[in-house]
Image (cartoon, rainbow, N blue to C red; front, side, top):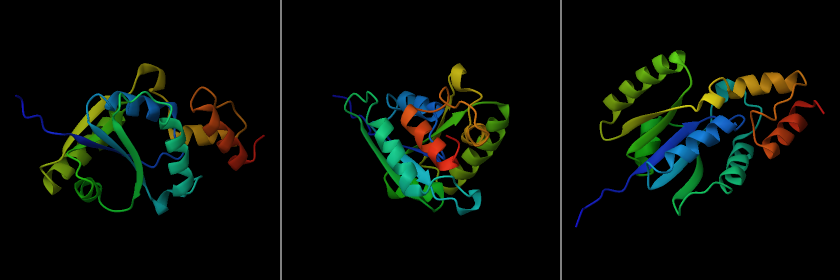
Length: 169
């Protein structure tokens, strides 16, 4: 009998707003881990469009529709060092999405730093699917703020909330 270690993954981000690219990474992370914690960063420096509880609500609503093959998915907020949060929830994997070379440089540096802070936690990079490579939360907010169509970049319920929040009906 094989003694298989349980893998708990943390997928961190500000998710302001949640995009289809985020959902793609979540869906693709599920086969890698037994339990996935979607960790919503409380980052006061970024001036988010949505409060942390609103972001958690949007994520919970959208991930409820994902096919998870009975995998455990939970959404939690955090405002501490990522490796400390990961350790506190028993995670041994950090999931990160990469869109471009510019993402890789930053993420490579962060993964190295996190490995020095806690060598028991591994970072796994998932390349963003080609249809989401140019999607970012910041870009979605800019498009919405200027009255553009964001339906290709975010789930419909999220789009409605962004339009309402940005005042561009």
